[in-house]
Length: 345
Image (cartoon, rainbow, N blue to C red; front, side, top):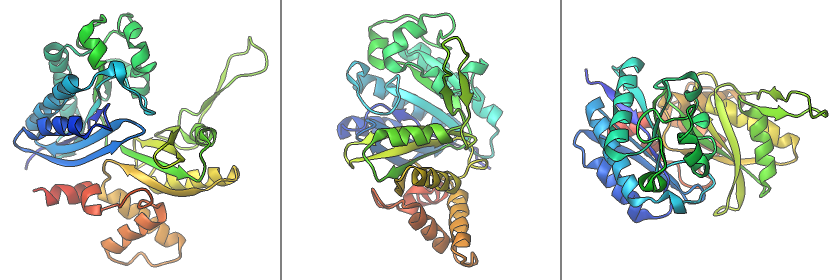
């Protein structure tokens, strides 16, 4: 049986279609991989690419995509609402079939070494591929973003795992990359009927696992961290100019712990408490079939409707209940990973 891994690189370009096409062409130049999805955001100025295949082909395609991104993206001029510190900002490898996480860790670290040595890009290994506990978190690796990168890579604590640890002309253009091995992550945005970013920021602090820092009255008191309501969840709030709304932007890092429908309902509850409401949501990239079926069954049960219906009906229920069609059409054949792989086989 073939070993299959997925790669979901995030590139710091979401507005120039020519540059995005150059990057995806470089990825597709490798035989044996299937380009499954390309999702660009204007406000984030970021493109999430999803492709899959056998490990050696995926690793080569990832390298070519990172190389092309370093040639066409100049981080000195990049602006966007999404946190970022490099042209090929994040490149996670995900086990899909007949391969262990330990095997994927080895592939991710070899790719990191190659990118660092051959392209001269500082690389941080994160999640399961991290060499140090504090580098498991992508947020820790990317703290301060591109603007603080010059000081961070020259420090002993945040010296890159591979590539240069001194600022030079190449690094100024490319920034750094985080390359890792992780479980399936769902990138998911929930839309609010307001243009006030503070509402989304506040809800994000309420729900994300890391929560918020509470400063007590006396300056000498130690700050207290209040953890959020959803485990395995990262969240920030941002304003999307093209739609005139704010979103709570989520990374659900383990959907067996916090599924999409649970996160959606929790944000609905928090929004209602603030006198606003959720109008819909947006999936960035792809989602496993099981997550859509779980969501559809959950909402059917809430509606006191039988769940003994076809898969298509269950999925359609999930799409409508989550409002996944609000900002753009949601096509299950393109957004559900098992369907997309089957369609591209």
